[in-house]
Amino acid sequence: MKLLRRLPRRRFLGRGFAAVGALVLEGCDKLSHTEWFPKVLGAGEGASRSVQRTLLTRKSMAQEFSEKDLSPSFRSNGTSEPQNPQYIELAKGAFADYRLKIDGLVDKPANLSMQDLRAMSSRTQITRHDCVEGWSAIAKWKGARLTAVLQTVGVKPNARYVVFHCADPMEADGTSPYYESIDMDDAYHVQTILAYALNDAALPIKNGAPIRLRVERQLGYKHAKYVMRLELVESLSHIGEGHGGYWEDQGYQWYAGV
Ligand SMILES: Nc1nc2c(c(=O)[nH]1)N[C@H]1C(S)=C(S)[C@@H](COP(=O)(O)O)O[C@H]1N2
Ligand SMILES: [Mo]
Image (cartoon, rainbow, N blue to C red):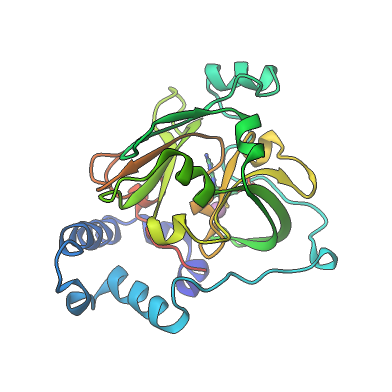
């Protein structure tokens, strides 16, 4: 979203914008169950998503780069050290005891170790990360394909979103953990991975160790770091404040196309 990037962040924290976002997302949730959903798309979020679908199709690939394009370094943004006692313990043990919990609308809930994740079908990609705060960087990511991870648990037909629950609290009192969500189109996209390596080294803590989402056709805040749990859901309304992500709850767009 070019517009989102040019305007100062506070413009998007206004109540009006949040309210419109909420209304449209709620609308999508309700309407997409019906046959006439495509016809009523036409305003706000719905319009930009349908334009995106038409012009690019949701299967389109984010641009990939080569080694010579790599940025000299990849900065950290947002949380760089999760203030969560359980996470700090896991980090001390080099994440040997880390388990990715997968539950919600799945046939076989699972707890996957890093070893399990590394054994899965992986993908390596060099992509550009665009943050709404006005910086971009090109880096090489390697991780388990989310499609492969989801296949091991079996997604129930009524699942419509994958929610990424993160370790880092966004409030000083330890509450309000960061979270994000994507729909099944993005979940099964070939460039959507749970990354455990950055530029050929283990993913550093500042960038989301032990795993962080890469969902390459969307902006930086969608790329959840410190992922502890995947929850498959039919609706986002009962999670956080109901808009599908920590920043979405502050008024950012849920579908943040690059
Ligand atoms: N858990 C968690 N994930 C997060 C954030 C965060 O603060 N916590 N920040 C987001 C934002 S705004 C950006 S731009 C990227 C930054 O990723 P990096 O720290 O690897 O640069 O992570 C995103 N994912
Ligand atoms: Mo960001």
